Amino acid sequence: MTPITFWFDPVSPYAYLAFERLPQALVGCSYVVEYRPILFAGLLKHWGQLGPAEIAPKRDWTYRHVQWLARQQGSEFALPAAHPFNPLPLLRLLIACGRDGRPSRWQCETVLRHVWCGGAAADDPQRLADLAAQLAPARDPQDAEVKDALRRGTDEAIAHGVFGVPSFELPARAAGAAPRLFWGLDALPMLRAALDGDPWFDTPPWQGPPLAGPGVTRR
Image (cartoon, rainbow, N blue to C red; front, side):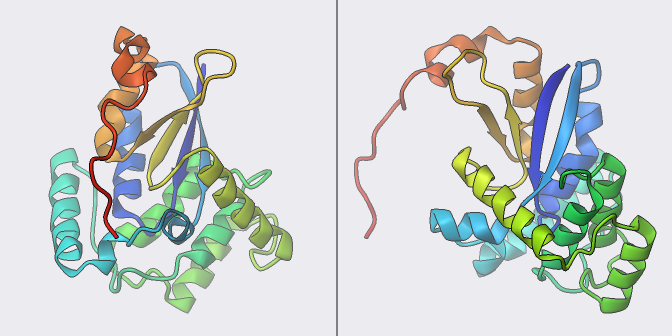
């Protein structure tokens, strides 16, 4: 089975939709998924980006777009009462639940649906307490080791070139080559093609250097 690393933050609606869509998108493929919670804000800070919700018209478009996509793929979906919200309690809960900080699909599903189904506040203290009771983490989410594990996981994602969520990582095809990264819900067909051995991934558009260098830089 081919290992897939699924880098995600439950604050992202696209991560939720990709999580829900993944089994259907890859039906018939031989794979196993490792779910890796990371802090999206940490990626944005490292790469010098603004989040979609920090640009007013992009925020409005994103909320319309994800509701359309959910309808198209048949996933239950409702915007939480406030967004963005602080995802750290949810991320630490996931880390605390999983063996070696790797939560199961059910644990990820429970957290993602906590956020994106029902329309309630994702960071409501009572809802968070009820969620923790349901998941029964093996460790205290407030332990320093759990917090450190989340920081290390985010740093590891950055070192692998991850710049957004959701991102999917496949192993390198040859010794010394870089892992193959696929970003976003709309990259699922591309991920599927790579798993199917599409020869395009051995051609210059994927393997070669960038097709064009920057002609101008913004100051």
